[in-house]
Figure 1 (spheres, rainbow, N blue to C red):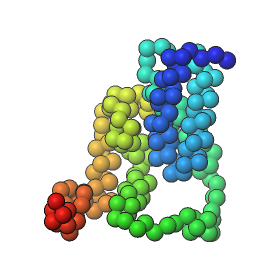
Figure 2: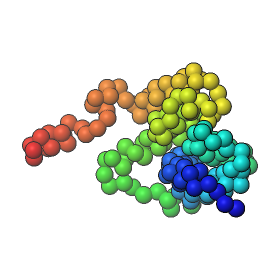
Figure 3: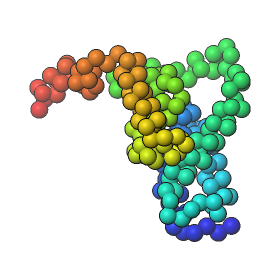
Length: 182
């Protein structure tokens, strides 16, 4: 099957963003890569359904999102690691504060309701406009804005942010050391 060069290039350009979104949804790089591969295969198989002039990235994100939800529905009753032995082998203590902060963010994101996390990742991490995110999720723009706002507020609450200037970025000790070196 031959695919138009412009369409192929648009798909390739969107692949890193698809992968990042898939990783954020699955929390597993291998599953995310499989999800992106399946997304691209479905897109190629159904390329005749793509309307030229529309947003290829949004179309691919919609396919990926639908695949993820289908997979999630299939797996929701499965228990892969009931005794926790496998999970305990995966935990590694980070050796730097940014790693701890990132881990806290991942945990807080995982605690968000799925629709809020999805909206926040589409708008905040993937760079989609509210309108594009609404199109991908199949809901109103106001709904996306509301979900993003609630997600941001809930993240701040889960991460115990009270004063954003002091809670985000280097702490006072680090800032003083950096000032002394400069």
